[in-house]
Image 1: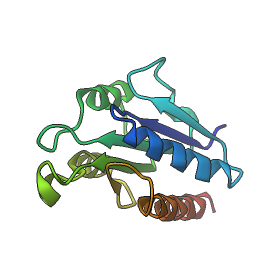
Image 2: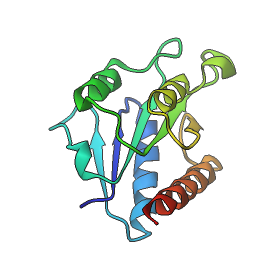
Image 3: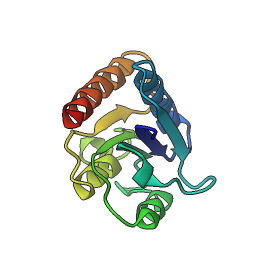
Length: 146
């Protein structure tokens, strides 16, 4: 059984970069991880994973992209645990709308962990946010395995 599934959608490449960083950090811990770009290829069987990470950019005025909504509906259930990450841009809508899709997904899935919110690209100082968040997710997940 593969331990983690990371599913994400990305248009600009920012959310994809975050997904790749998370996957790299998890696999460096010796944990199996699969990634899936939402809307491309066959829908993964979420049941075969011990943990599920989902990532999305925020669209329009704080909206979750339709392909993410379709993906969530196609899964048809709420796996446990779900960890959420997202990218956004405060120049369009300010802090009120920043990474609103990630917040909505975390609420919907009753995520046990705060969503990771990245301003545009995870490069530079924000890579540390990804590292710290991923460490926290792994610590939480390992605690569930005990």
